[in-house]
Length: 298
Image 1 (cartoon, one colour):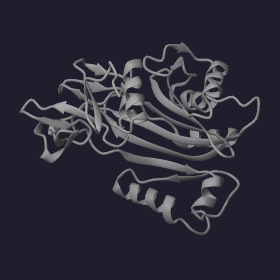
Image 2: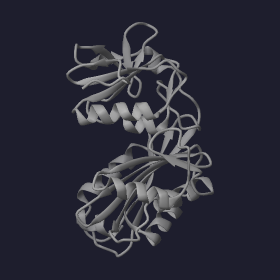
Image 3: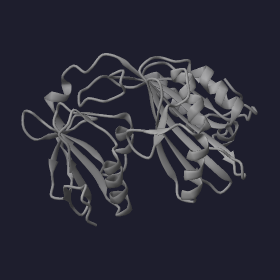
Image 4: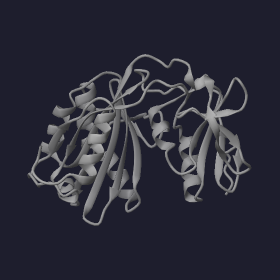
């Protein structure tokens, strides 16, 4: 595979060099990720230490061998998400032991409130997708999304009908989209399933919101599978710096009837909400709920 947007190509990864303050999931970056994925390769984005990544690009760099590679002022490279020192092994940037001192510097103040929600629909001719993202944006930002697109910036005026048409034209292949609202940035993936259509939405805002109220609204309007709310220390503009800001902490989660059956819980006919401790104990409870929950609701 050759692609004009990729600076270095190996047997395992494509490498893109970026030297700008904010690196986004631009149209050509999205194309680079797509091209690498189709060829079974990861994408590794190399930036200087002063660069930040947008939320959509951060979410996109989660596949095998995908990395944010930061040039260490002290020499070498490190992972912008974990701080792990990296070295080029001839095929990819890989862990090289230890943590970079630059990553340990104090990170930015602030809190990012992030929602991950999955909803499933029965397929029918007049089904409109994108409404889930709209509801989440309304709850987090106070209004519907202003724009959407297949890359950043999300410059197409929000229109559920137009968005739905694009997803139908691309089916049965999944469609990945980005949307923006008042302080809200999010991504959504629309996927055909054997029984219908699934929408998975991740959205963030730089202030706290009522996660339980959002879960109740999603449960009332859709077939909610699950929703997780968490706080992530970081910049209110939702970009991420290559420095340690602190661990994400859970806020709460909702488990819908379909997921209740899948994990062996009592099926209530509605989503069940769980408040989670904002610390390690909360993640332990989260793991217990999704893996071993049995018997009546708590």
